[in-house]
Each structure stands twice: as C-alpha cells, then as structure tokens.
Image (cartoon, rainbow, N blue to C red; front, top):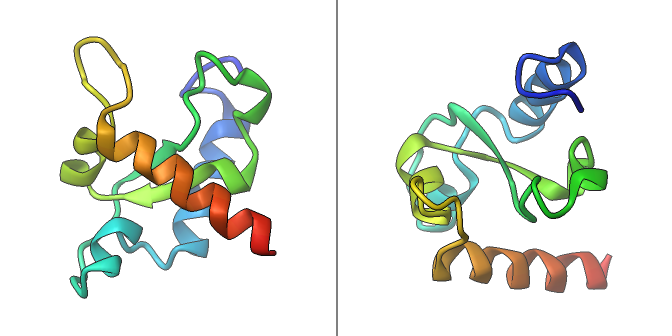
Length: 95
C-alpha cells in the first residue's frame, strides 16, 4: 500500500465500513450505536505492512475509539489497542 490516498486503500476502507455496517465495532460491544468514520489497522501498519489490506486486521471505529487505540503523537498502541489485538487473536483462533 502506497498510503491512505492509494486507490486500493480507499476501496478496502469502503469494503470494511460496509462489512461493519458503518458502525463503530468497539461501541457496539457496549450496546451503543455510533457511526464509524475510521478504519483502524489492529496490528500497526508501520510494523506489519504485509497486513495493510488484510480484512482480518481492519476494524471500523468512530473517531473517539480510534484515538483510544493508539497515542496520536507517538502512534504507539495504548493498553486498549493491545487488548484489541488479544481479543481479535482469540476470535481468529476459534474460526
């Protein structure tokens, strides 16, 4: 992937938002219905470029939840971002 302006990314982003019904998947866990505006790389793109367009590594989030997943200054995952990785890994192992 060449970046977030890349046509492949733009297409994949729409596919993921549609898959997740344009709802923040983190908010849904808590019974809230919040529109998703972001598609988050569960495993960070910088250290996992091979997963850039992997649907299993992408999740629709609202802006608030997206900001809670990683520090926007350092781009390091937060504890919540690390927990998401563990949760997704558990789900993928059962599939």
